[in-house]
Amino acid sequence: METKRVAIVGYNRIPFAKINTAYTEKSNQDLLTAALNGLIDRCNLQGKLLGEVAGGAVIKHISESNLIRESVMETALDPATPGCDLQQACDTGIEAAIYIGNKIALGQIESGIACGVEAMSNIPFETSVRLRKALLKANKEKSVFGKIKQLLNPKLKDWMPVPYKGQEPKTGLVMGGHTEITAKYYKISREDQDLLAFKSHQNMAKAYDEGFFDDMISPAFGLDKDNNLRRDTSLEKLAQLKPAFDKQNGTLTAGNSTPFTDGASAILLASEEWAKENNLPVLAYITYAEVAGIEYVENKQNLLLAPVFAADRMLKKAGMNLEDFDYYEIHEAFAAQVLATLKIWENDDVAKKFGLEKSLGKIDRNKLNVKGGSLAAAHPFAATGGRIIATLAKLLDEKGSGKGFISICAARGQGVTMILEK
Image 1: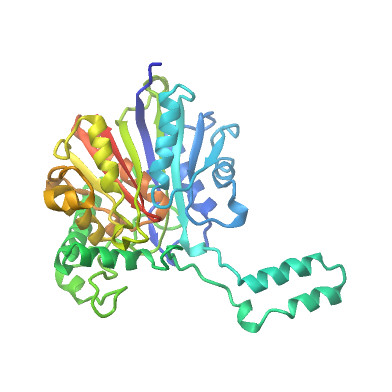
Image 2: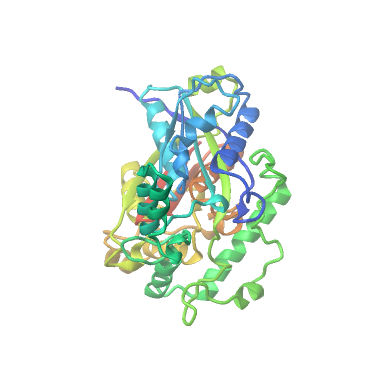
């Protein structure tokens, strides 16, 4: 069976906002609908019946079990367009692109949207187990007295909501805690982490000034730019920040780590024929992608290093080397995770110890995250993949040819890599 080429033909996102700032009162559906409507306006999709819209949020309320379909029905798309919820931690947005892309490649659909959203400001709280059981029992009671009796069983502390902590269930550590272990294990210095963060902000500020994001971001709810960007940051300011996770001996700070973030992004994918029929440009093609997992419970330094294996397998299938790309987009969850990943890919001894046959090659740092990365834009979990795909597709389209490499790490020891070509 002959497969079709998967083209990236449009993109849009709303500005990313640090938690409890611009989007404090907004839900996942509010943010995603805004991003989708922005894409619809850019690509003249009003009334169009698309093959499917797929995406998701890492953290959802119970009422958001059909988030994508509900959001689609709030847009100007033909309401018969189906929607599918996916979730793979920080890989969600790019995994949605793989899902839609595979359907296009197989001829099952001609067009589709991959999307992702995170409304961390509107995060649901858990209840204690004792309170949950009491509420369920009270709901079964028929008399008011019976309901009150059940509700008197929980202790006062049981009524306190349980906030989201972002811990890995099997280790009890938050992502930053794991990455502190990674930084120590691979001897990643505080200075190198701060330098990578500084360059991320510098590159993004320059990209804004050049107008690179003018056709990529639609204003939403009073915000027109990513509000985590720090134009005035410096190596001196970054060096003054205190460790955020290991208070005594840590190197990860609020400056070289991404904060909890609200935001949404959307990518329009299509066959070449559909793009031509709808007068949309082919910005780039998705040609290869690979998803990997890694053991991280015994080897706690591994949590965010699964892209190492994904890249190795993907490059072998593509018959390419790590040096063969014009641009590299590596998700900056933490500066230390980026630097550790690069160290494994680029150093023979470290690569072999990690489990690779050999190092994968060198990355020209002048080609890495040239328009800024997650440390500057911030990181709404499920929306980051769309931001990165859009950025790389536009870079390749502006160049007119070339290849681009994407790497995104995720919680639970997972990671994804992708190749775009023009």
